[in-house]
Image (cartoon, rainbow, N blue to C red; front, side):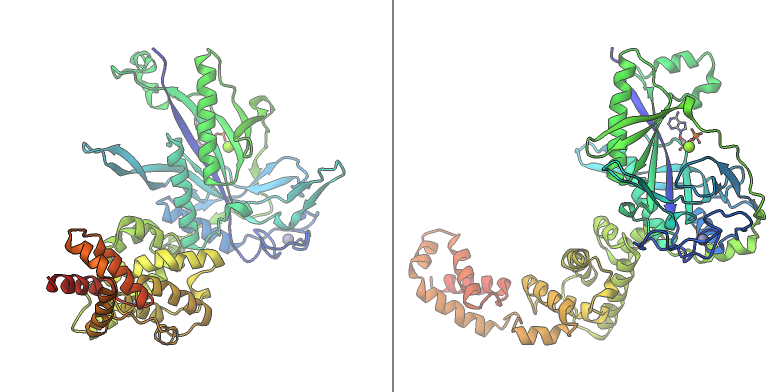
Amino acid sequence: MAVKYESVIGLEIHAELNTKTKMFCQCLNDPNERHPNINICPICMGHPGTLPVINRDAVEKVIMTGLALHGEIPEFSQFDRKNYFYPDLPKGYQISQYKYPLVNGGYLEILISGSRTSDGSPTSEMKRIRITRIHLEEDAGRLSHDKSGGASLVDFNRAGVPLMELVTEPDFRTADEVKKFGEELQKIVRYIGASDADMEKGQMRIEVNISLREIADQRGNSLRESAMKISPRNSALELGTKVEIKNINSFKFAADAVEYETKRQSEILDGGGKIVQETRGWNESRNESFSQRSKEEAHDYRYFPEPDLPPLKISRDWVDKLQARIPELPAEKIGRFIKEFGIERDIAEILSREKTLADYYEAVISELKEYDEETPEKPVRNLEKLAASVMTGDFLRILRKQAATPSDLNINPENFAELTLYLAEDKISNLAAKRVLEEMVHSGNDPSDIINRLNLWQISDTADLENIARHIISENPKTVEDYRGGKMASVQFLIGQVMKESRGKANPKIVQEIIKKLLNSHN
Ligand code: ADP
Ligand code: MG
Ligand code: ZN
């Protein structure tokens, strides 16, 4: 029988913090600075005789991330020197944290697709991924290699930028779990305002550690497990040799790397080979990993406490204040939106992906509530659902196209609510709403002004519509005959003609009623 393996995966995720200045000096932390070596000074360049000063904002952002992930904040923390040489590291060492990180433990729950129910529909379940630690360090500079064989260039603008490193326990089993975790973490650091976490800009980077181990056969015992009955103490710790894949800059590539590496390692194991513990790189265009360096070439960083910085004493009072600054996080928000507004999980998920959009949605809802209280006769349609659907549809499409947040656009929540109401009351069609929305973005005008100007009010006046319908029926005697001969589809044709005659403004529901009534009364 062929041996089956499961993948065991742990992640190391780096995120650049979005502080105003660098980690230990007053240089600007500006990821958009295009001119190289502008934001540098003797401190981040490691000149002799200079002294670093800890950036309080960076420390706070790491602690807040730790609190959001249910981690423990110790009362004592310390920076260490990690010594190595590389051209992007001007000091010859990196200030990092080794023994006493800012955050110990914690976890993040992700929603993964679970087993199928008896009727075959997919279910989802929560999985808890444990976090080992989160620490604070500084980023290195950026190298660019001249492909024509000339020189390599270095830009130190990024050297000394605050960098948070989060390490997880080896709790992942699938590529999907890795992707979900990355996306969830990205949302959380953005909500907290700790990092912009733009992977394309390298503000968030993932390292995937992966090994394989045998899993149970049909009878439920793995080879390893039966061996472990002799020494059950090791059972929970039994892990295969791991490979670390570096420089992954998208969640999709992280998932691809897991798939690729699972296949590569299982082929080696099936062939009777052994996995070499090594660091591999990820080639995204070839969709494969490649060997970079083996364990034998691993560095000895000779960590020691950073002599130029005082240890950190973290008071409980400070931690409490930071806890109070953490906003409602995406997972909670999704749950509340579903409960409070009766919207679908998928829609709630899209709305809360970015805090700015979620906040905007709530602002619109509160405008609609005001209206709801003032209006005794309520429209049939659920306003919260309708607003959510317009927002995650046409509105989001416009935001994406312009790479904008809601406040960048000209539409205030009051106007958005007004547009939703016209739709709910069938005063405009879906098609017209789309057009009005685009006009609103463009001009910032009130929806009613735009609808007036473009003459987009839907005709719901029965008398008007009946006139048009009579006219259409008298002009299409053949179709009417077909209908009476039993061809029901003729109704659709006649409705289409009325819509055309009204230049799309007729209320299709009312038109249908009228056409049917007229056809049947002629009988
Ligand atoms: P290293 O010292 O090589 O950096 P660590 O013990 O610090 O290794 O772990 C780094 C990451 O690798 C963590 O995310 C951890 O969960 C994961 N990891 C450790 N051992 C394994 C293994 N055997 N298989 C898969 N992942 C592992
Ligand atoms: Mg490591
Ligand atoms: Zn500096």
